Each structure stands twice: as structure tokens, then as C-alpha cells.
Image 1 (cartoon, helix red, strand yellow):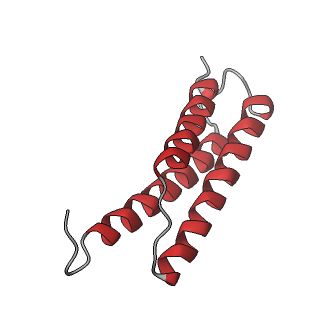
Image 2: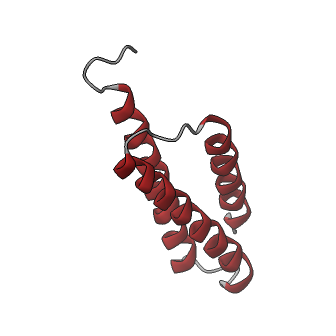
Length: 94
């Protein structure tokens, strides 16, 4: 059984949700991190599509898919961290 097509769907849904709700941070350092996070997500999606075609169909070991999901998780968590830290600045209202 192979689930790489579900991971490709997950990657596309992550891109759609971030594209819909992304607000660039006013702080330069956070804005730079927000530039780096989509790069992780783009690399993740590219790896996942490559893994879909290149990895053995019936094997359990899928290192390309694992790396892609770790990068996607990292990019998503980085975006979430930046969004949360922008909301919790002193003097900001929720």
C-alpha cells in the first residue's frame, strides 16, 4: 500500500491554507523567516512528488517521503510560530 498521493494532497492543502491566511510580519527578522518557511514547503512538495514516482511501491521504507513530511512539518510550524508570536506582542489585542 502506498500513501504518497495523500501526502501530495496534504502538501497542496498546506500551500492553499498558507496562501489564504498569510500576513507578512512587520518585523524584518520574522518576515525573513516567513520567506524561508515557504522554501521548506516547496522543497517538501518537490520531494514528495519525486518520492511518488521514485520510491518502491510496496516497501515500508520511504526515506524521501519521510524527509518531505519533516520539511513540511517544519515549514508549517515555523509559520505557526511566527503568526502566534506576532499576535502575542506586548500591547497587541487578540
